Length: 448
Image 1 (cartoon, one colour):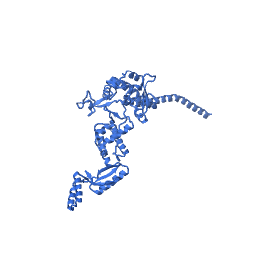
Image 2 (tube, rainbow, N blue to C red):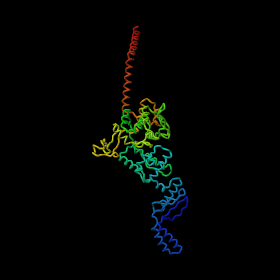
Image 3 (tube, rainbow, N blue to C red):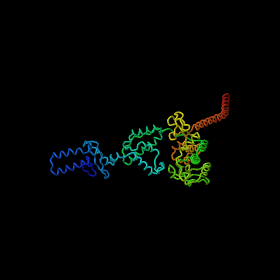
Image 4 (cartoon, rainbow, N blue to C red):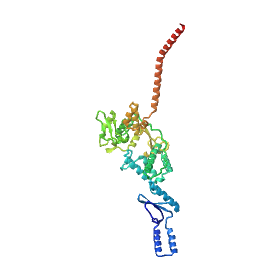
């Protein structure tokens, strides 16, 4: 294919695109003109040529030294000329050519987000078994928007994505994490000057902050139900309030178990907020860690041991929580508690992958640690230093008020009222004597 327009750098032109046969006919017309052919013959060739040219006018212009051709989608030269003028104006103001914008796909948006995370050394990136990095909240976007052009991800498309996840039973908070990632993708492209608009992405209303926590007795019951290779990691999680990602990365050279003040020293590279901190260890945690076998650099390894650090253990965790009475496996259809993988309501056997879990999660140990520190009278600033909370707002979400706290508050108020009444009962007779004495003196003065 070729065209019949003349191109000048910095300017643009309207052209027609010709097929291979059209190019041959153009050459024949030039040869016929040179040979002095009659007008009738030339008109016949021109009529044939029109059958081999594009129906629409094409815009031809340059951007950063690169020629761009874009269909005007119209056979009106006037309309195409106005479109060309608009494109040249956009380029003059530094905007990306519309033809380039149309080529941007969802995968480009996602890759730009991942690049931003890598450049800023964000620690929320996950790594799969093949060594590829990813974000869990981007996975649903990958499945739904794969192959989409960026300009096809409209507000309506976002609404369909939300409905799709809701139909799969995803919580609003989970959906919001994916929407936040999608919004960030568009903003990065707009910042780079590759996109000019983005869909309206509205967040869903989320449920209140999770209030899961365990008492010391419940923790010991849970630990007894866990396999031996997980007893150490839950002990560290419960008594230090460390994040699971931080615990997984622990190496033996980061632990001081023999000093006067046993502790774990976390460098800024190992913590989520990038700030180093020290996590003191109590006697029970030191004892549990001392019993672990040192098979490699990492403190916590998989069930088979070895030199690699601990991987995913959700299945073992859920099974232990069910045995400890801190969780349950439910039917995805009717939400009935399953017994031996069978739903009594639906009368169907559910495989593990089909079942849904409801109950305690590992992060609840962190919540419990924060709550226990505050209840024990530890100053909140010190507690934040131990748990690694950077902002007060997030710390307050962890410092959850339970029903027992509310009952305890009422009991304390009643005790305060009782103490006030007792004090008032002691003071009243003395005050009454003072009042009676004053009244007696007044009566005598009146008689005299």
